Length: 203
Image 1 (cartoon, rainbow, N blue to C red):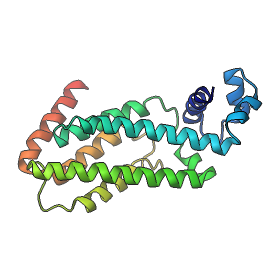
Image 2: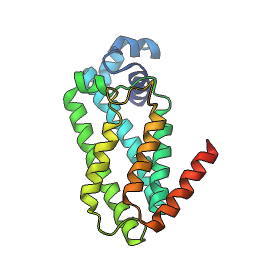
Image 3: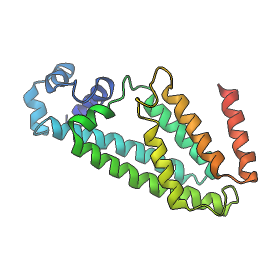
Image 4: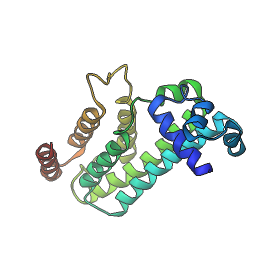
């Protein structure tokens, strides 16, 4: 039952927002009593925390599986991008704003975990790309990883990139190409062009 509550609550939170969905809404959707939910979670904050970290764990596991394939580092980033877009395609709204506003401690912890994971993955990707001659050897992987993280979060800001003008798919794809063009060697650029061409063909 605990897992079913997390699954249903997560679906509702991502669809309607963390503030908008009440414990009554979740109970009604599941045709159970609110008391049953409180048996497993002491309050809504505890449920929100569990749901957000389950989503984070799911994304982290998916990225780990892609990295374990040990692909070309440019291909690896394109595969991660595709995976993230699949995860985002069912979101009806962006719940990050409500999470930041109403659950700042959870939001901050999630942000920190995301930062640590992205730094780890991007550093490894950078190291591999430099070793294979696809990324420039004079780059500082730690600096570039931080810039990449900053950009990934920046493109989610709907004040800067309103969804009606800049859909999630567009900004994610354009930002990845922008990032890679800044770090590839001439050899890496040939590989990048291949993936851009494949992407355009698939579209």
